[in-house]
Image (tube, rainbow, N blue to C red; front, side, top):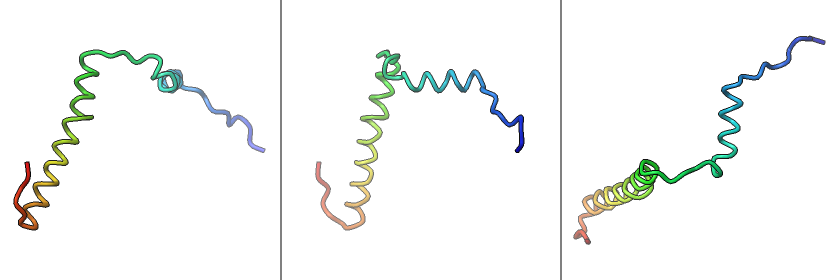
Length: 66
């Protein structure tokens, strides 16, 4: 059989993997994290929803609702 085929570990990849495994323990609420969650967790979904509803109303000629 072939020898010398063992994998060499990359220190940076191992560090990244262990950081991902303990993300919930190392997470801190900062202004930046709060702003990102507000933007991509609340504002973007609302804007996408409103855009879909607006396009739907235009396509079937219904009166828009508020």
